[in-house]
Amino acid sequence: MLHTLDLNASQTDSATRRALSTLSLAVTKCKKIIVVTGAGISCSSGIPDFRSSDGLYALVKQQYPDVVLKGRDLFDASLFRNPTSTSVFYTFISELKQSIDSASPTPTHHFIKTLDSKRKLLRSYTQNIDGLEERAGLAGSSSQGVKTNGKGKAKIRVKDVRNVQLHGDIHRVRCTFCSAEFPSTAEHLKAFRTGIPPDCPECTSRSNDRVARAARALKVGTLRPAIVLYDEPHPLGDDIGSMQSADIARKPDMLIIMGTSLKVHGLKKLVKDFARTVVFVNKTAPGAEWDGIIDYHVVGETDRWVERVVEDWRKVRPADWEVQQKLAATGEEGAGAFAVPRSWKAEGAREHPAAGAGRAPAVHALPEPPSPGKRRQTGSHYGDVESSPSKKRDAGERKEHVVFEERGLLYAGDFDLGEVVLAKESRKRAASSATKTGAPKMKMEVVLDAQKPARRGTRVTSSSRI
Image (tube, rainbow, N blue to C red):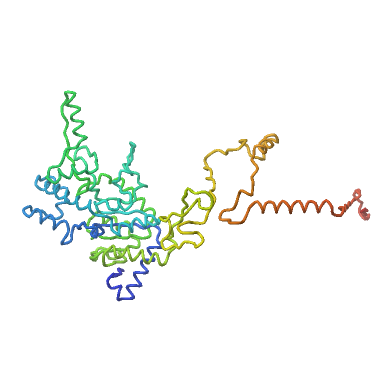
């Protein structure tokens, strides 16, 4: 059954407000969340979406009134069959790339990163090509940091991918002939703006080398944005399929869909495979085909909903938001050798009055623990029990005597470890002296005479002497 929750109605309707709080609590309790996002989560960053009245489709019609193109045609692989539509596509992509470069991640992008940092995100899947998830800190499938350099089948390291870019990345360009990829630069955008794509440098280099050897020149491909159009195979299709299968096998406990109309066929199958507890956050309602699959429809902007979830999360589980303090060396000697950096202090945390302004209680530096993989640095490679008496004696002579008066406990203040040790030694000496001067010990001896086995009817006796 679909439950519709309106964010605007939550201000006046107590039942909706309680339902939204319950949904926020469910998010905080989940540990394996799949997030699927669309263009709607990037609207607040200044990037228009694809299907609204003020979206990118309307922008194309304003710039090219004489060209008759439907909105879908600008992202369809068939546009490369016509030189005019190809030029319009390159010009449109250059303008889109310029608007994306001036955008910044939204609260929704940061919320997905928060789920990942709190170890609640299984993986994120996005239809967007803007790459704002990577700017928020999520490694994307098109990122250079996840590429493999080996000759294996896999092109990316699946475990390192936190955000799967289903439609590619506009920040990279790909050759139409050799499939070589390069980062998108200002020179590429300048060529795209004229409607003429630049030549591939890899193809050009190989062709020039052959011409220099008096051989026949090779075909030179052109560069295009490294995005996946409609009816076009994904270059990382096998890797994305393996990631999807691995995530399904891990049985996610919640699926959150934000900012998408769920009209793309490939995304439909993805959502139905991940269907568990499904939360749909979008301004428009889902279609009738999603009856029985989507459990909650949150009507409103995604940024408002994620901010509400984070607010409720901080209230019900404040321990999840505590920041562990770290000590930094101050360069001083003695009591002020270490302090808590201001950047590591928890929000709203108060300093202890005795610690001083911006300074933590003094601590002593502890030695760094040895690595468990290293060999023991001892006088013998055998244990102390198995060492010979001479080695034990030599090792004991090499040991330095510890001056307890110069050592102290962590956060000990006036408490001295040396006094405790000396007190224990004095008690031992007193106990030993008491045993020497005490009364003589009493000895008792019991002797039993050995007897032969007696015959039947004979009485057995024993004598004892004390």
